[in-house]
Length: 313
Image (cartoon, rainbow, N blue to C red; front, side, top):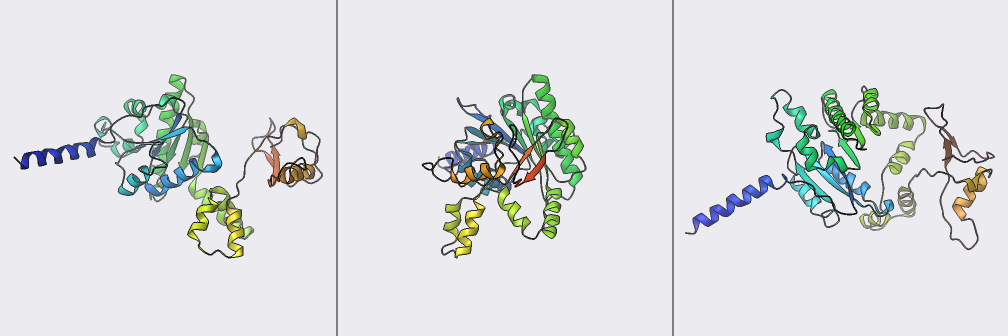
C-alpha cells in the first residue's frame, strides 16, 4: 500500500526529468526570438546572456531558445532558473530518436540538430530573427568542430532559401581555414577564436596595453556590480572600472553635420550642442565611410581639420 505509490511517484519524476526538454517553443505576441545552438555550456551561455540582455542595449523584446544535444547541467539549470532569465529563455533537447540516421554521422548530426525538420519546427526557425552557432573552444579536432558549424549553417541557409525566410546567422569558428566557406554560405558574422587571440597577442607586442583596451571594449561591464565585488577600490580602480563600462558604437552622421570640421563635431558630441543641454560625454574616436568600390572601409582616427560628409559613420 505504501510502496506502490512511492514507486509510481519516482517513475513519474523520472519521466518528467527525461522529457522535460522535449517540448517546443511557443511564440509570444509582441516578442521575437533568437536560437542558440551548437556547443552550449554554462560559461559561454552565461556570457551570452549577460551581453544579450545588458542594460545598455535598452529594452530587448527577444526570447532565447537553446537547442542542445544534452540536457542542461546543474549549473545551467540554476542559470535558466534565474528570475532575470526564467521567462526569457527556453531550453530544448534534441530528440535523439529522430536524429539517429546513421552511426557514422551520429556525433556530427547531434551537434547539427537544426538539419532536421522536427527541430526546426520545435524552435520556430521560420520566425527566428537570428541563429547563433557556438563552438567548443577547447576542442582538439578543430577541423571537425568547424565542419559541424558549417553543416549547421548550410542547413539553415538552405532552409531559409527554400522557405523565403530571412534568418541572420552568427558563427563561432576555431580556425580561419574555412573563412571563404562561411561567406559563401551567407553567414552575417563569423568569429574565428584562434585568429582573434593571435591578433590580440600581435597587437599587444606592437602596442603594449592594447590587449586590455580591446578586451574591455569587447565586453559589457556593469559598473555597479564591479563595485560590489571590490569593497574598497583605490582611485585608479575607480578610473579603470569607469573606463571598462564605456562602449563603442557605430552611428551614421546625419546631414546636419555636413561640412562641419571633425573637431567641432567631436566637441559637440562631448559637451552638448547648447548650453542648457547636459554634457553628452561621448567621445568621437574615428570616422569611416564605405565606398561602393571598396570592400573594406577606410577608418580615419581623429581626422582633425577634415570636413564631415553625409554617409560618414
